[in-house]
Length: 299
Image (cartoon, rainbow, N blue to C red; front, side, top):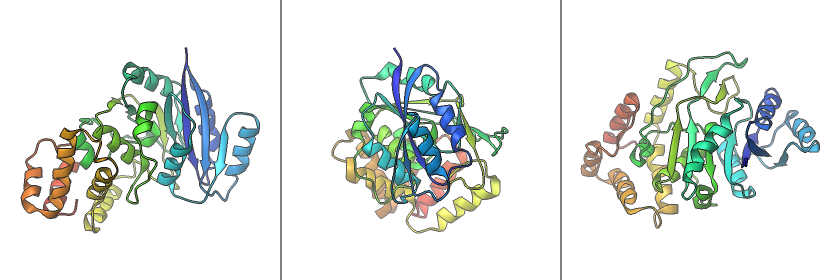
């Protein structure tokens, strides 16, 4: 029997690539797919395209004020009907036909607990010509999730057990919905699967809200700006995680989260974090930059 996946897409001025992405979602193999779209205040012909698909029974959409991608996706999740599985979709990628079936096959082995799948992406240019992708090899630990943000929401699929944990409250400090949901999954010891095989053509173009493959100088400029900013996002997101979920997070993860936050107020605790092997990530550059931010108390 085919499993049901509810795909959640947020759109904003996406007329150029939208049809190609929607068609790639609707033609996924070996799963039953429904597509729910929230438009985040488009000014182009996005709504005309959505009207066309909705009138043909291909999707359901609704509109709302401009919230930005992270809050628009969270609004979708908070208002979505119940499904066995949920997946996030950007408006401008192209999904390979086995994307959802591969995810569901891996998740169905652990249906009795919260479970989340994500995968490697294949970066392309705007014409879907392949470009070099950033290869990740995550450790999949809670400590790593506090310091290394590498999950692409457009590859995520998760079950209803995880959705039930996710609060209907959206924290003020939430850089992106995928990072937030991944942190929740890791905090609650969900079954998390990383697939090193790409099942998505991750289109990069001049109007991406976020993306990859911008180059060495772009990446380092972003890192420097983060370092110079006041109050790094890592600790703010950790504070939100403890505020919303501290009463229910398993004790062994709560201890790590508490130590991570205590470091903001104690140099001794920051040194403890520095030498604690729980706070390690698979990316060496990120690890070194985290240590620098940690010692400067800008994490």
